[in-house]
Length: 264
Image (cartoon, rainbow, N blue to C red; front, side, top):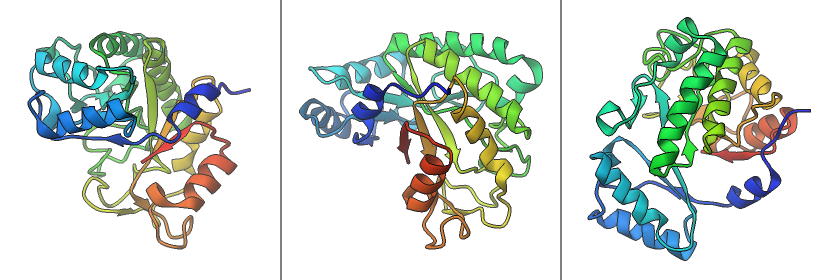
């Protein structure tokens, strides 16, 4: 059967609160406040976005701040490749191709080797969660996924194969992965970074298929990230997937059988 995340991992992170912070140095007030909450066990995870990335030394110092003490928090970053890569060659990191370029020029096994190398670079610095891979279908007109080249394509089997290479490569380097953006952001008319994107009109079972295939594979991710995506037929109360019982409990857990961690 499919390999699911070990029960102890699921149990350890199921109730964790993961927060972001302002600033890019250890002098940041919110970084220090968050580090204190981590030490007290009030917060279980930290995530870095672009505005938290200074020099390599700055990032290393912040990681040291969050990892000080007995707590071992989840420390996450988006490291997809292409335009979504916070840590670049300027920080000593290999530049990763975009998902679209990866799928067009490399085999899944070749991609896995590149992701393994990238995972070792992340792990060596102190990160243990990568907020990827993207399982959304490719639509070149889509502002959130298609235009930035973040999708592996339109064929669910092909997407799942490259997403599995991502999970396997980074996983072998010691990182947990969060497949996104459930139940499918690729054909949305809006960008969920800025609005609750309504996918009702364009979403189909094809959008769900890459998630179903990856979850049923030996590369089942430890986490699935839901999107701020509204679908009035899947969730008649109008709630987006990020806070929808029918989409998370009903669709992701009961229908697809996912037993890992669901995150927003």
